[in-house]
Image 1: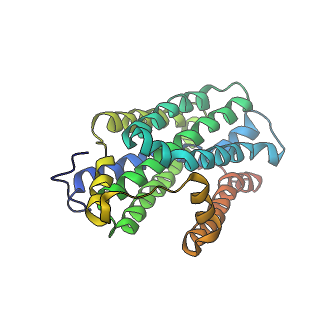
Image 2: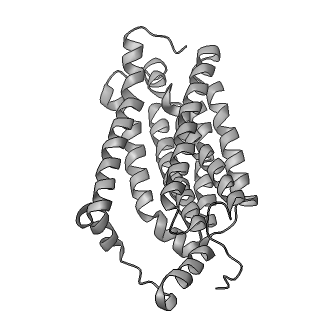
Image 3: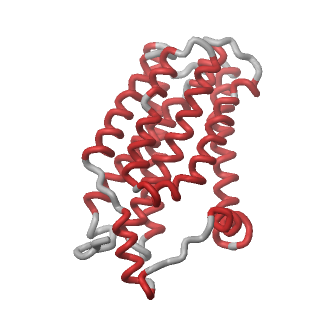
Length: 265
């Protein structure tokens, strides 16, 4: 692969890096659609009282996203980062429409399967692409900026949907935002984002003797990240606990607030 003229670094690739930060903000905003109001929809519109049933949408989302995350890196290596990013946005297209018009709770759960796949592909790929661009010295910074953009957008989108729901009702108006997120995220990914796989080829040729790296198997990656590598396993465990906390807040806080008689506003 021709890699002459490639320069690694955040400053050297600031335009594409900033664009990927923006794309991941739209990725995070898609999750924020549900944060404030989906448990309220379960109780008020579908009359679901069992807490376990209400939290089913989070379990389905989490499992689906985890499995998709597991394979996203290999898919990005095999088919190209941009293709996987675009595929993730294509999977997300039905989500806001299902949330708007779902006739029963099973449709909401199905929408969260799609949302989990979409998040697993898009969020993972934007991380990979930023790391491709900056090279070995700035990977932590790239990861931090990616997570900041995504979760800041989660919060902003949750605030916006809650505010719209307090003005216009739980459905469909708050989910109009999701249509906007999908349109902008997909168009940016298709038309403006550029493939970054060749940056990896350049890094391997520049920083590794012989110009080739032996790729570990999927099982070896899983074993190292989960058990044998102290640094990676610590990160994995911290991420597990953090996402468990996040999922409980996502599902339980709106129910606690509603039980206390608090309005969406």
